Image (cartoon, rainbow, N blue to C red; front, side, top):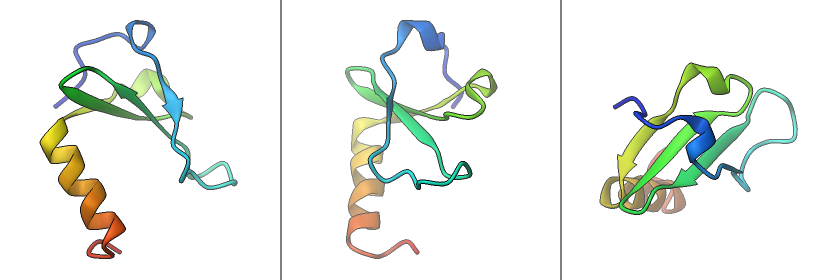
Length: 68
């Protein structure tokens, strides 16, 4: 779903897994019961919001090597 919140209302941080080159830049913001994700090079393009349980499942799958 698209973010109903403006980027100014959110505290964004760059992912520790973003690559050093300019093509892999992801930022996230914790929103209480959700996590927002956006492309740091195109912040005006909006963000995606995920429920905490969905985001935790995604991160777990990445860490376990299920998504490559």
